[in-house]
Structure formats: structure tokens, C-alpha cells
View 1 (cartoon, one colour):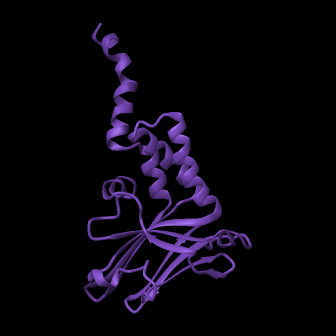
View 2: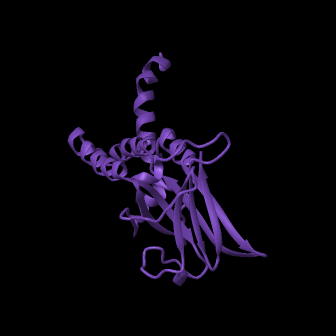
View 3: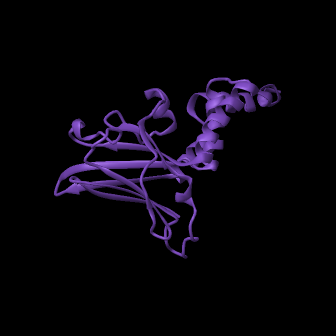
Length: 193
């Protein structure tokens, strides 16, 4: 009898767990679309670069998760999806988290920065960003959706021209897209197949 009493609670408990802890689907999608590179000189960390490609698959998972967290009705959920989707339909977008030991050197969004950020597609044509801006998400949202972006990281949203995703198809074993950050502190290359 006790088994019958609690069988109806399973889906509600699972749904509540996902609202509080996050859905496994979103975490898996973020992990699949995220790359990280640490650059060292001897024992010193020069910088750590982590980025998530905000692909259509990632946008769908994020929108579902966002709607669950904020209990959005269908109309408000569609607005969130439309906002993120429209940006990603007109650009190739990334969420970028950068750690530098000296915070003054963490200035990707500023004109005249010492960093060069490029997106290189399979045919080796490279593109400069259309924009680099500090993320508009709150710090709690960043830690929920991008758990690799810790307290000492600075979070950015970066967009490249839509052409950057085109070009010749990637050859077997080569990367479809490469995000390249270089500067006086070193160089990091993050690749997506």
C-alpha cells in the first residue's frame, strides 16, 4: 500500500529537483559545447579561457532550463527563446569566461585591449568579433548555466559574423570552428568538431 501511495510523487519530485538543481539535459548540452584551455609559464598560470558555443542545440536546452527556473508561461518562454535565438541566427555566438591573475588584464570588451580574439573556420579563414561585451546575465545565473565560470573569472558574450560558420566542410579529424585568444600572456585555441 505504501508503494501505491508514493508512486504519483515521482514525476513531481523529479521536476522540483530539476528546477532547483538543473536538468541533466542542460548540463550535458553545456558540457558538450564547452572547451577550456589553461595557459601556464612554469608553475604560474598566465590565463584560463573557457567558452561555450551558443549553438541552436544549446539555445533550446538553455531556454527550457531558463523557463523552468523562472516558471515562465508559454508567452514569456517564447519571448526568451526568440531573444536568444534571434541573436544566434544572425551571429555565431559564444559565452566566454576568462581568468587572469591580474584583473586589469582581463579587458576583452575594451577598445585597445592587448588581447586578440578570432574565430577560425575549417578553411582557415579567420573572423574578428562583431561585438565583445560583458555578459548581461546575473552572477547567480552565470554560475547556474556556466558552472565553470568561477568567482575570479570575467564573463563575456562574443558574437562573430554568421559567415564564420560557413565555408568548406571540415575535413575528417579537423575542427569545424576554432576560437583563438592570443596576447602577450600567451595563446589558447579552443576547437569544436
